[in-house]
Image (tube, rainbow, N blue to C red; front, side, top):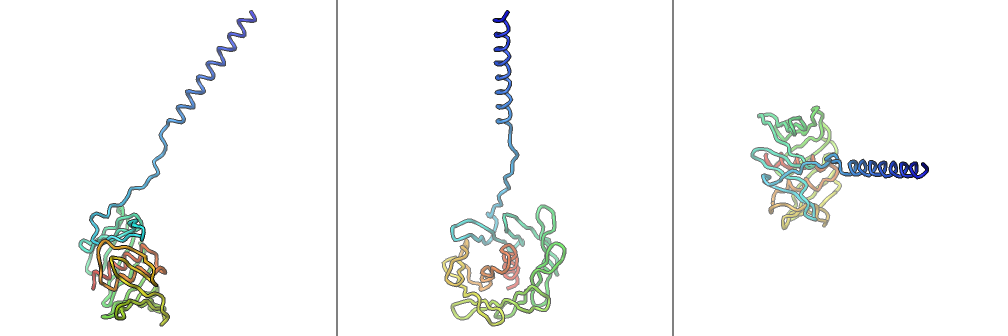
Length: 205
């Protein structure tokens, strides 16, 4: 009788261990939630911007107007007086045109940046009065960015790169000559918004 109880207890231990192992395997092999995000392709972009290490971070096409920034593609719906940019069907940014430039607004129509364009310079400010504006202007072989007459950056465009104060900031998919590319040196403006401003300025030059 004693042997019977011992054998029964041993059998129960084996069965319990087998069930636990099966449950552990089931838990381990269950699929995990897919948290990866879809990568944006820049194959259709007219201009692609990359980090000095070669990582693509954004770009744009002027026709049709399309912006790539922050691993997101923005397509536009165009009217004579404005561009509205959408991603995944949702409004993200709005560009409102003026006779001497344009305004970049967020999805709620709040002003982000006011851009005024002149024959020889570009001014960018975060207010309607255009006070404390960043001024971008070409001086002989260099492009300078000033604010209230204080020089912030000396920008160079050469060998398909954008450099500021002798430091390479971005690589370009092709050589570019427009001084408007100095906009990308303005780290005071979020990178995503710089790409929007740059594309819209180039479309008007």
